[in-house]
Amino acid sequence: MTISVSFRMGLCWFLLSFLFHSLYAHNDFFTSIGQMTDLLYTEKDLVTSLKEYIRQEENRLEQVKEWADKLDSLTNTATQDPEGFLGHPVNAFKLMKRLNSEWGDLESLVLKDTTNGFISNLTMQRQFFPTEEDQTGAAKALLRLQDTYQLSANTISNGDLPGVVHKSRMTVADCFELGKIAYSEADYYHTELWMAQALTQLDEGEESTIEKVTVMDYLNYAIYQQGELERALELTKRMLKLDPNHQRANGNLKYFEFQLEKQRKAEAEKKEQEDKKREKKVLDKREAQRKRSKDPLPERKKYEKLCRGEGVKLTPRRQSRLFCRYFDNNRNPRLLLAPVKQEDEWDRPRIVRYHDIISDSEITTVKELAKPRLRRATISNPVTGVLETAPYRISKSAWLSAYEHSTIEKINQRIEDVTDLEMDTAEELQVANYGVGGQYEPHFDFGRKDEPDAFKELGTGNRIATWLFYMSDVSAGGATVFPDVGAAVWPKKGTAVFWYNLFASGEGDYSTRHAACPVLVGNKWVSNKWIHERGQEFRRPCAMSEME
Image (cartoon, rainbow, N blue to C red):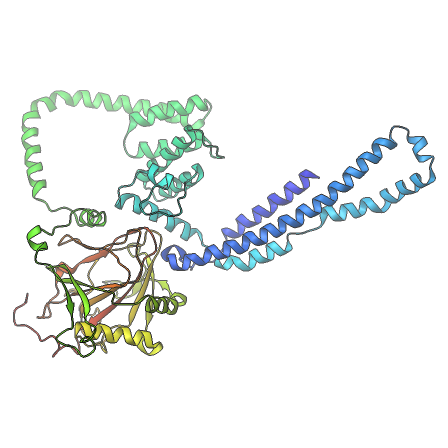
């Protein structure tokens, strides 16, 4: 009886696993935390359905147990004196009845299928499940966060992230899966980090179905691929202590020993020549270091440092020239009685922040309008001009027009009042929600000279300025950074930042190259307005100097 139930439960979970991996592949859940929240309710509904299935199974098994207990007592008594027991005609009749019909009823009870409700619900809900692409995307996001914020695998595995409310620890299986995804991408650096973490947790006594030898096999290969033969050899010997018959480990042992011996001989042969060249080599090395010291830090490194709050280049003298003020934009009638709070965030390029510029109720309305329309954010291919998804932009976005809702119309009017720029030629309000490790790597908002057709179809000229609303606070990460000038602006709900992408001459301001840092902890919602050149001729007159 127990074997039958266990088998059927196993079959149920097999079907669940199968369905998880055979779903539609177009949802891109990992690119939007806002849409991902729906998955929690989907899972909650499935758990409710599963618990109902368990209740029915337990009820059925209780009936079977009662029947077994009753017959156990009866047969114990009957087998002590079989002939005497059956000498009673009622006992003989009931034995015939039990074996002819009641055991048949019990068989039907045992074979009764109570999975229909659960499986039907699961089938209905499966369209809302994430796909293999989502799981891979979420895994890559963890690796990206690990690199950007310089987090150890142990820190992430323990859930020790800044600002977390719901701490969650990773199991050996979780770490192993992350390492496997890195391995499948030939990312042996992260493969090593996460297989090593999985092995550490196994060494510390964590129970898991993942075997140490399996983890060590992946770890060994990752270490070898990074050129560390001695470490790979030591790990191979450790593997063979656990499993002396491991075929690959035995092969690797001979290969690594051969390669190490070959390496040592080559090093010995070169040692004499290297000694002779040592003095020149030291001089060359110093010269190389001198040249490297003059080389600028790669943009990626600048970007990541700014995301961590490092490398901000605002000197105390420049900082002293930044102010806060009440701003009515030259006595604009709509701002005269209620001027906005303006704060200088940066001087070159000039970036200003407006506080309390969008209300909580307006934010709620914008999010409600946008959420059903959120789609994976795209970028314009600089060669073909075709819109396409990119791994360096992890978010979902939607576009909202002024005619759709009075709130959008009010927001557009407010931007116009504050900036004194024409909104009729601006793009629609773009709403974006960032996903797991959501980011947008360094980019320009305006079209460069090598992209003459960037906004040709709009017929409104280049993007003269950017207005960016922050519609949520972010617990950790998620800053807007400008790597070329060392500026960082942190999200604050209800505020907006504004900057010009073009000089008054119409030339692009390349110092406005910016990025959205990965969201480490939290849910980041923003909306932005890209304002175009057409219609600004008298609002922002063209200058004669190229850089003015």
